Length: 350
Picture 1 (cartoon, rainbow, N blue to C red):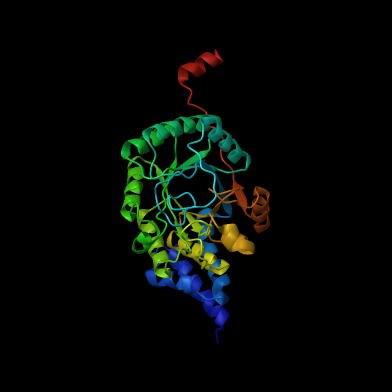
Picture 2: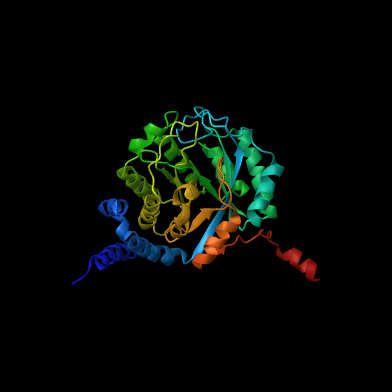
């Protein structure tokens, strides 16, 4: 007779088999992932790792984030220390100079990051700010060749096209939560506003980085809804943030997550979006704590160093964690040489 442990392994391996065969995770299975018991968590992680390994092997993609413009935001997002309703004691400054942003890119390359993320607070950028960032990205691409992701808020078509022409690879614009719950965390813009910016970025040919924040008071069904919405959109990258209840923000008193809950959420995102990059993002040190390494059995990327207004663990600790797992960091390729035409080659050889 099959024991309980064997039944759990069979249950989650069956789910992984169906995902690997191309069958989308059902809503019922997605709910079951989040409702799984602590006793079956290792079996769930093992099955999820089979999916992660199929598409990403044991590679880990590192991101380095630069808070290019801090605070000064008119929006009322309840989770954010930079919002208009936050009294958190953070630095507030306008868009940083090209040299400071280029310096951050050099730090990203030195930290073995493949992607450099330029983040600016606010509802959306002015055309002047877009031009400043575009010129900076051109310089970064020329010197370092880093993959570039920008998070700038709501964008229009012309702005998205300018960023694309400058060499920006990807736009980050998170859904953050489900449509049902969205008005509970923000009232100054809508869920549909966010979807519109994702469509704008896609029309410009930009990759989409779009994820969520868990632990804000949402239900399990809200998390499932967001995971399935991201699957329907077909984003290239999903950052999974765990709420850091920062003093001075409306959600300062919300503390709902356990380390095991965070692992279940990462498994859910991998199983609903098997071929998509899943990133362990803000709050991993706070919530996963000593279980951080297990998160990489579901996720294949993570931030290295600090976040927007909160500190992360040291890069050296991240490198050691990845090495101890037997995984390997995907390094960036370096600057791309400009094409050389045939006449130039002939002149050089003559």
